[in-house]
Amino acid sequence: MADECFRHPRLAAIYDPLDPDRSDLDAYVRMAEEFEAHRVLDIGCGTGVFALLLAERGIEVVGVDPAEASIEVAEGKPGSEAVRWIRGDVSALPPLQVDLVTMTANVAQAIVDQRIWHETLWRAYESLRPGGRLLFETRDPARRAWEEWNREESHCVAEIRDVGTVESWVEVTDVSWPLVTFRWTYVVAPDGQVLTSDSTLRFRERKEVESDLIAHGYVIDDVRDAPDRPGREFVFVARRPEAG
Image 1 (spheres, rainbow, N blue to C red):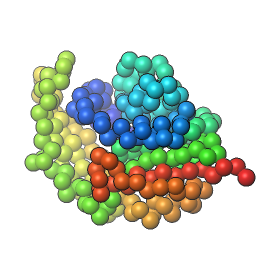
Image 2: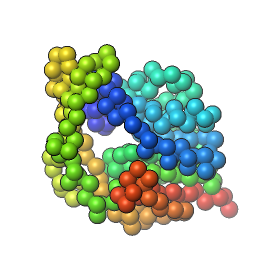
Image 3: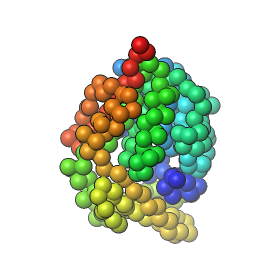
Image 4: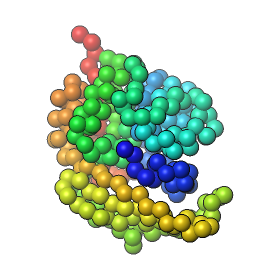
């Protein structure tokens, strides 16, 4: 099930304005061009930011996400008709043959259930044409990113058009390795409604991810550094081997 910040209509509507700088996606756009991807499956597409960046470049995109409210936000954006939006998890995917499957931002780590994680890797593999690639990022556990997730370092007050002032911050609520749970709190004007969204991420070691990919038939082409968080994240590039 998707987190409240993606499922709640009021929170989904302010998700993009609260995080307007998505330059982290630039590297993924460049890699889609590097791999000459003409058809892309974006797993966990959320409000559609990345899917629409690809569609603007003439790439055929399928975006899948279980959060109804986020998909509705995506469908309301200019150019959304160029993307095929699917409500659901990977089990809802029709047969596909794409050049590239992506999971940007926290998507891979948000799949905390190991059974669902392995199903996702399998479904992605089945959706790729022979020679197609899977591309996703995950934080390096050794960097202990959650130690920076506190109110002091995350507190923000933003003015959002047609909404007003939104105050937000994040706090870690539990660390039960390899799971880290945290809570975002939002105070939304004009009525001062307080909304919260709990999230859990699974921190996987590089060797664990590599073993999982190999077990599902992938060839690991590269493990890159995340340009927006150098030294803090792994960017995996895995490939479905050519037939025969």
